[in-house]
Figure (cartoon, rainbow, N blue to C red):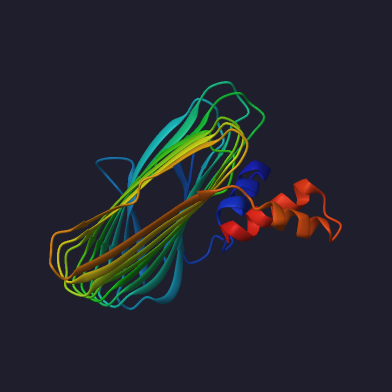
Length: 307
C-alpha cells in the first residue's frame, strides 16, 4: 500500500525502527485498519466484537519485530481500539507501537489505545511506544493509553514509552501483574510545552517470589504545562523494586511526582527516589563557552537528559 506524505511523516516520527510493510505489521489510520501482514511466527487477527486486533506470537519467535502503529490525520475523530497480545512461552519479540496525530482542523482528535499483554513463561518482550502530535489547527491532540501487562514466571518485559511533543492532553494508565522470577524494566520519557497536560499512573504488583522491577521516569516541563506522575510498586512476596522519577522544570510549568511503595510481605525490598529541579546555570555557561546560544545549550541538555 502506498502511504500519503502526512502518514509517512507521522510514521517516521513514531516508529523508531522504521515502518515497512513486511513481516508482521498492522497500520491503523483514522479508526480503520488499512493494511496488515503476518509472518511465519506471528499472526494478527481482527476482533469481531469490538475495534482492535489479537496478536498471536508463537514461542518459536526469536528476535522478530511486530509493528502496529496508529495514525490519526483527520480532525474531529475519536478512535478507541483494543489490542490483545498473546505471547507464548519462550518467545523473544520486539513490539513497536505508538500513535501520531496530525490535526489541521479546529476539532479535537483523540486516540485511546487499550493494550493487554498476556506473556507466557521464559519469554522476552520489548514494547516500544511513541506518542506524537503535529498540525496547524487549533483542535486538540489527545492520547489516553491504557496498558495492562500480565507476566508469567521467569519472563522479562521491557516497557519503553516516549511522548515526543505536540500532545495537548494525555492520561496514561499502566497496570502490571508479575509472576515468580519475572523482571520488569520501565523507561518513561516525556516532554510538555505550552499549556499541555500529562498524567501518568502506574500500578505494579510484584506477586511472585524473586520478581523485580525497575521503573525510571524522566520528564521536561516547559512554559505553563503541567505533569503528574504516580508510579506505584506493591510487593506481595519476596521481591525487589526501584522507582526513580527525575524531572526538569522550566518557565511557569508545574510538576507533581508521587512515587508510592507498598510492602505486603516481610521480604519485599522497595526503594523510591524523586527529584525535580531546574537546569544548572553552570551547565549552560559551560556549553555557551563552546559558542552555543543559551537556547541551543538548553536543547542539548534536555536531549541528553531524556536519553
